[in-house]
Length: 332
Image (cartoon, rainbow, N blue to C red; front, side):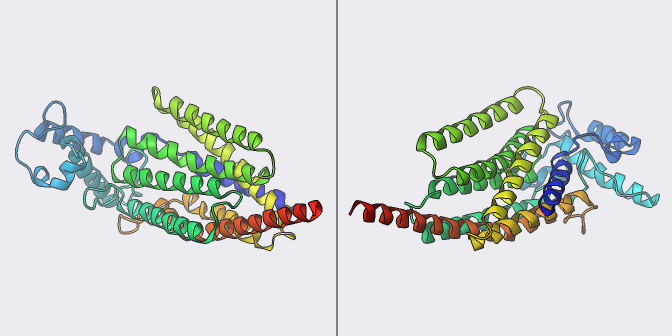
């Protein structure tokens, strides 16, 4: 009964988390914002909106230039704060703009806290990968699978940091698709862990199918308008399957492998951390919102999961050697 409750909780939370609304918001739809943006662009920007008609303070910031902040973007940033102040003066709630809260820009970064905590996740994965390579022998079962998983996660966190630095269609595409690559990689590792004793043909076939599906996923989202609905469904189905599979495996293995509590606890805490995404709130100090804090929480959870991975690989290698010794004894 507890198992089904956990799976139901995973289903609900993943559904809510992965269903990101990419719609216009109260702030950018307001007439105040639209008028501000219109007149700012007319007064300061060229027809294309990229360059400036006259000298402005914005124009002299080299970091903003490097991160491709155009005149129109600067007008949007300035009008966002004007609109936010207007809302607060009327005792209205803090508005969102194009689906995002207003954030104070720092060194040209749109969401500095999310960038910082994405980097923290990258560093955590990197440090734990180094520990994994130090403590686990390369001939251990699942060694190559978990190394590939680590590199996939490192790549995903790089693009998360880039996307939160500057939100462009291409950075959004790469952030969303490579975020899904982590979800798919976890599902892949879960299945590979369950079939690790099968023939190399079976294992390789499954891995190739996962790679082919990701290529299809990436290609589909790259063509035409980004399909948020499809991306949400793919994440939801893969994420729920992966989480439920790991939970079920941990329950079945709990007596034989005492250390599986680490994997089980990781899944539960990871799911509970999604409550931050559900209970969204305006950014504290215009910097720390629920999403950025969620990124902060996932970093230490990574240490717990790698601890499970390392211990499991060591156990599998010991079992492999014991099996070989038994076979040798039978031959003798």
